[in-house]
Length: 309
Image 1 (cartoon, rainbow, N blue to C red):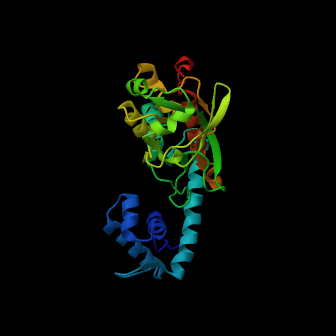
Image 2 (image 1 turned 90 degrees about the horizontal axis):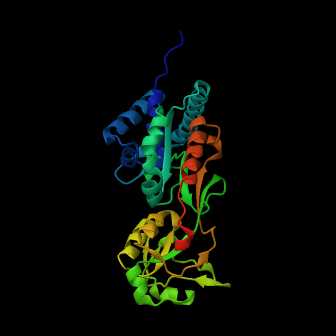
């Protein structure tokens, strides 16, 4: 019978987290475990391998040459384990295992979360870890299986799947619009008090009554990285602004918001929602199923009544 391996495979994800997050404390925060547990896992690996994996003192923390070599092998082992788990899941016909997904705050709160109970019922074997974040994520570095993003990803090596092509709407509260006396797109910038950060530096192309042009928010506008917060500010009377249709459809129907200029249109490719993922994970059964589920959800997003626009 072969001798047992002198170190534990369960410690590999901890080692990889320490290497990628460059420290025990950041790795512990990322993994959601105690720092002492991380330290013990690294100590076990160093004892089992007989090499020092990290140089660490009060001033610096870095991976050693031996640690870097071990890291490359550890990544390969973990990836192979993921592939094996995915293959077994596909063969059984029941998706299982861990799936790490990141989403923007508004998409997670208003689009995905209402379907979470249905997701749990349909895929009880999937262990979903969901990151709701306003920050850009690194799919490879952060070990994310799928990231929902607005616009094109910065990493051209990622695979992109279009989920939803949104229309950007120019809206206001009824009370504010009555005071504004708006009758031309050229007047809109002087009424923009709050803007989603992604649109703050863009000259947004528009069409209105056979004419076209561009609108740019003034530098004095408050910049927010969440469209629902922009929407809520506009509802409270904070000027005229831009909100993607999926985040203001209900408010248009209820009358909390109205179109600033009926018939004003922006190019529909401004607010595209996509899912991005690393090509090396495209064969995973659970990844493909979740992508299909996201697409199904997005097909159910109701469109605003055109008579309101």
